[in-house]
Length: 451
Image 1 (cartoon, one colour):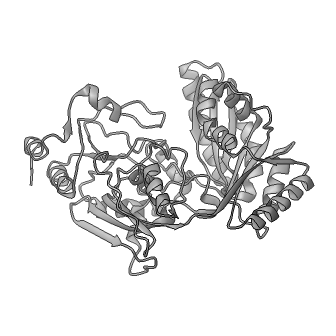
Image 2: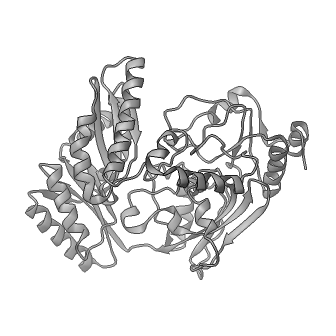
Image 3: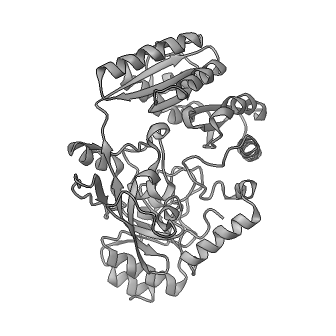
C-alpha cells in the first residue's frame, strides 16, 4: 500500500486532479462559506482505490473530505486546508431492482433522480425527495440523513437504508445489513454512520429499501388570512385519519420573490398558504380526502384549490433561489421545532430582526422543519456579518428554548458546530468525540466538522 504521495499517485494514475483551476469546483458546496482549494482531488473507481487512499492518509495523517454532488448547505463538503477530496462521481453504479426483496444496491456517487428512474421503471418507489434530487448524490444523502417534502409521511433517508458497505477511517472494512428488512443484532452501527457527515467512515455501497408507489397523488393550495389559521388547519389535518404526504407553508414575501424571479404571473396563488399533498390508491379515497380538506379549510377561514400541481411545486422549489435573487445577501438556517411550537416560533422570529435585515420563513410545516432566511436589505459587508452572526445565535437559542434542535436536514458541518454546546451537554459531546476517535483514530476524515 502507498505510504507517500508519489506512490499514491502511481497507484491511482488517471484518477487524480491537481490543477488548481480544475480543483476549484471542489472547493465549495451550497453553504455560504468561502472556498478552500484542496491539495488534490481523487476520483476513485473501486474499493481498492479507497483502501489505497486510506493507507496513505493514515500513514501521513493526511485529512480527507468525501464529496458527493456538493449540494450540502452546512459546509460538510468543504475541504480541509491542504486536504484531499475524494469525489465519488465515478462510483455511481445502480444495480437492477431486487423485486423479491424490494431493494436496490447503489454506489455513493449515483444521482438521486437516476436511482428514482430505475426504481420507477421496475414499478416500485424510493420516496425520499430533497429539493436537489436532480443533482445530489445518494452518498451525500446518507451522510446528511437527507429529508424533503415527503418526510411528514414517508420519513427520511435513514428509514430506507437497509445496508451499508465500506471502510472505517482506519481502513478496516465494514458491512452492515443487506436485503433483510428487520435486523436488531448488536448496536446499530449502521444508523450511526447515517448522518455522520463523512466523519466516521467511507461508504462504498448502499442497499435501499423500496416501497410500492401510490396510484394517485394530488396537491392542494390552501390559503389563509393568518399563519394562526394555517396552523389550526394543519392541526386538524394531522389529527385526522388522513395522512398527508406533504405540508409546506409559504409566506406572502416568498410568493412575491418567486413571481419576480420566474418572471411569471402566479396571481392565482395566495399566501399565507399551506401546500398539501395526499396520496391514495383509489379515486374514491382521493375524492373523500378532497371533500374533507375543503370543508376543514373553510372552517379555518381559508380557501383551497387544486389542479395546478406542477405550478405549486415549481413555486415551492424556487423559493430559496428567488429570495437569494431578491435581496443583497441571504443566509438560511434549517432549525426544527415541535409542530405544536411552530406558531410561537414564527411569532417570535420577527423580533430578532436587526436594523437593515429581514427574516422570512418557509418550509416543512408538517414536521416543524422551518427554513429561516436572514436577508440583508442595505447593510455593508461588515455590518451584515455582525448582524447575521448575532441573529443566528438568537435563532438557535429560540429554537432550543421551544424544544427544537439545531438542524432538521442540513446537518452541522462547519456552519453550526459552534452551537453544539447549546444542544448537547459536555458529557454528551465527550461521548460523541470518543465515538469519532474509535472510528477514526488518526482523525483524518473531515476532522474540522461537527465539533
